[in-house]
Image (cartoon, rainbow, N blue to C red; front, side, top):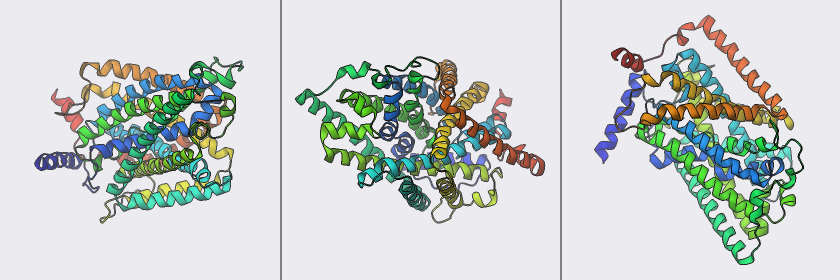
Length: 493
């Protein structure tokens, strides 16, 4: 067993060298830890906890069935992403895939969008942790400034832990995922037992439009029914985060793609069961729909305040783990671009601490971005930025699927690696149709106009730096470091 593990690790490190990089990051993440990294980013309980109120107010309880549609669509995308992860195991994931299989200029855009998506996501998760979990758990009244202070404190704590050790990141993440799954199972079972004993349940909720029943634009483009998909689209994302830590995973050609696909399937199933149990347990749809924390209210009414506090404590830990994963993934994105001289202050951002074997400056950058956003964006401005971050992953996934369809014939299958065989083309084609539809859902509501402009603004800022590289350092955008094994493979055929 030891010999096999060493051999696989050596093969992965050799590929890293062939790609022009000296292995600097430590391979400490095992199979379950890689899965936990991917699953923690989605954090099903956290996603449902934070968006169930929006679902109830826009599409009503019946909107939970849209979760199934999103889960199937995102699984198809995950299968395409896994095809790349099984062949290129480098930090930076989609940035590396596009740079090496299309060209560095295209790859740079992938990397820039991924950086901002992840950087904003860290703030979104931690601000939700502060306002929706920590403050209610401590009995603190809602206050934006207090939530911002707590968010900054959480960001600092996560930065310290992410810098300290990748192994520690894996342990905390695994613990958070295990606890989250346990909480979901326990709440579902407890709700089922209590409802069976008391008879206080309502299966009709599963087909009810609730307070949205009188909405005139319920079935319109950008209306209530379409808005109900946002829960799944904002939760079942980030599965590619495992690929961003590929240089720190053992046996990455197998563990990473399997984690990507398995995490989406697990999250889809667990989330649906949780949603069904919660929805049936609603006593008063109107009251719950107007509650700022409907999940907590349902649990409190059915299981008591003590169980509610246990839920909040578990959610808080799961959110903390999710924030750590996003921060680690974002820092690796910065590190990957910086070592290719394609990120601002690249000479500093590429540095890896020899003792912790983690990219310290890149991680500190994520902290700085988070603090700046907390200090400068007030009220609605922060909400608009967070909404904009839901559009970015859809853009990135769409681009990944297009890239796959364009270069799939150049991809060599690694022995024992993940593959779809003859199903790869139909899966990718349907995945592309799904992503286009998901983007349509996200950008058509009137409320999405400002977030859409924010996304365009982030792209415009990036293009400014891109032009600077073209003018003053063009060579970094013309060639890739290392051996172009994909060009060699194509020539051999």
